[in-house]
Each structure stands twice: as C-alpha cells, then as structure tokens.
Image (cartoon, rainbow, N blue to C red):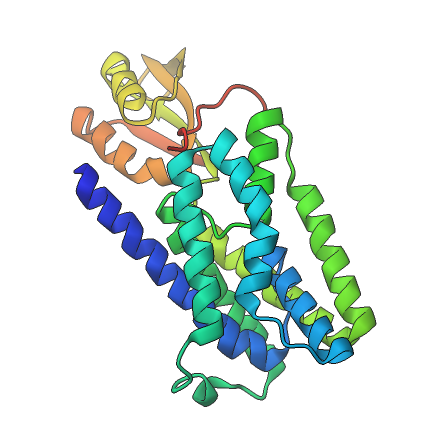
Length: 289
C-alpha cells in the first residue's frame, strides 16, 4: 500500500478507536460505575477517589496524560517512534473526548442494568482497541509497559499486568462496592474474549502443508510472512506414493492470504491449520516502526 494512503488509514483507524473508547467510557462504563483494566481503570479510580473523598473533580484527560507520560517516552526511545506517536495520538484524542464529548447520545444510553453495561461496554471496548491495534499502535498505558518488557528483555509481562489489574479492582471493591469490582471483571473478560476474535495479530497458527511443489510453496511462505519452514519426507498410504510436507508457524492474520497463494501454486495441496497455544523459540515478529 502507498505510504501516504497507509498513513491516512492509520490516522482514521486511531481516530475511530479514540471516539469509540471515549463514547464507551461516557456511556456504558459510567452507567455501570465500572473499572476497566490498565491505566484507563486506574484513571477512573483516581478520579472517583478525588471526587468522593476530596470533593475535587479532576479531569479524566489530565490523569491519563500524567500516567502515560513516562511509559510513552520509554516506548518512543526503545520500541518505535511512529508506534509511540500514533499511540500518543490515541491517548490524547480519547482523553480529550472523554472530558468534552457532546452529551446528546450519552444520556440516552445510560443503561440501568449493570450487567448489560458490563457486556456491551466490554464489546465496545474490544472494538476500539482492535481498531487501534490494526493501525499499528496501542491504547497506551500498560500496553507500553508489556511491549517494552517483552521486546527488551524477552519476558512475558502480562502476568504482572494482570496482577496490577487485580490490585485496582481490589482497591475499588474496598473503597466503593464489591459488586462494582465483580461487574468490572465481567467487563474485562468480555473485552479479552472479543479482542481475541477481532484482532489476531498476536496469535499463531501451525500449518502442515502436503504438496508436490515444496520449493515454490516455501518461497511464498518466506516472501509473504518472513517465516521459515521445515520439510518432512513421508509416504502416502492411500495412493502409495512419496509425499513432502512443509511445517511452518505463522501469525494468525497471515493464514488466509497465505492459503490463497499456496492454492494458486498447487491447487491439490493439502493444508491443515492448527491453533498454536504455546511457542518457545525463534519466531519472527514484524518490527514496530
């Protein structure tokens, strides 16, 4: 895709994601008094504490910007400049709109059923995050920290992020109400499940490809995904003939175009796609710009 068109596409995806996130915070999240995960949830928690115990209204955007400042700088220096800038745009726009979004639809969607707010709020939250991820950015906060730790130190940080979310929910349960924290768990669970369907960039798939043109098929895998493959030689019992199988692990969002390309080379290729639960070893990840 042309670089200018790609830039415009990323810009509008992030803008759409920011608008949806702000809208969701002002409707479903506010209606259910929910605490989302990450820095967004921490921002709402701090905002609520200031209001209840100090009678001070602190703008959502100010708290969000302060919390994200240091992680954003670290991401800019060590992960990717464009990645950090686009993510910063998501944070700035969503924070601003959360404080100043017009209320003509907000009052209409103030649901009185907290369970409905948790489920539909979680779905909308997943949609806004997926738009941001498709643009090659994040919604900031703990994502910055997790990506930095995983890419800099090759360690999985999501367990620490989960622990941090548990602390936020525990604080909300202690300071406000237990049911508020429990409904927030439903919100976060719905977000996670929906996001796994909407965005598959972090998922992997194992492909077992039986083909009569292994060299050409491997060339397609290499050129389209930058992943390698291992060749196995076997014997097909049904036709009593020698067979060649390629074994390769690719990202889930690369599977559909790759299968089309393989079928264009060998229409008789037999392809088995398997979900990869755990992967240990060298696996090419697209670099962040």
